[in-house]
Image: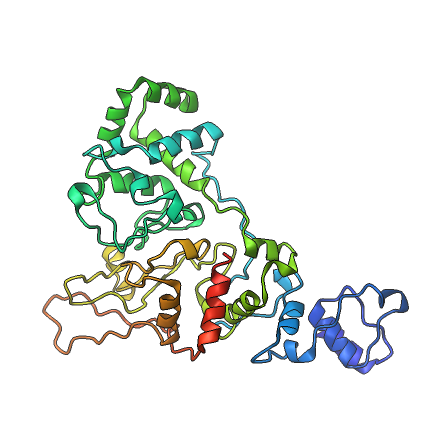
Length: 392
């Protein structure tokens, strides 16, 4: 760093108080000094052992490391080639040009989200599998649908759906509008059709009036229906939580254990390989070894959409915002609690064995994700990461 080199070579040169904390600390350690008028109000120097990446930094060290804005935090531990993003405050979700959000559209979408008449039986609504009190998930391993049929996958929370680049565990929808249509037509879920659902709503004068107020006509068609539900789901972006307050400069918003968990999350936990940026997801697909290849409950995820052997067993990385309220976890809901998720990653994920003699025409056996490996974290370290996740 040019700043540090200059400071080292010219010991009497003052260290500027506006330099990044890392540069300021190193400059002072190399013999530089603060200007007389700056010594009183300059930020405390960050200890060198913190900057050097101490394996077990203490609470005071961590508070100094994470006191600046997240853009100035130490570089996280990620694998070579990973395109990571630093953790940051969550912005509003992007708005599609053809479906701008309005208060009236959100209100209509909320009504439709809770409307059982969108299902063939007239008994199942979107909210049946995405309950507000359960983080807009449903607390089940898999959901029940039409005629009490069990679903195939865990119902993911839709609270962060407006920030997702693809929807569903396998990414088969690329817009919230497309996602809103799919459960209505799925024979295991609502077992209806969007057109038939819209026709049913047209018989209700109150719906005709509300659609007219929002869209300027009483048509009540499938496109409008999907747009209204999507607008409501975009409005579900979580409110500011404890971690957001910490990002905003409230240094005591995280206690010592939670702060230690944040540091482990960004370093030896390896979590930033997949969970970074404001939404805490890379919006990519990974194979965690939970595909059950060759068994009755086999699910090859993204491969079933693309047909690409490289996608076999891969599932979309969910956002971690609000994660503490959306148990159980993984695409099949097989991990009941956050501590079981952390234990799963700590041992290196699932390790299924490929069949010795695969059946003729069998789909490709999923290759393990290279990012998965044993972490060797101790119980108190796993508890610290869990404490941090509960602030999200």
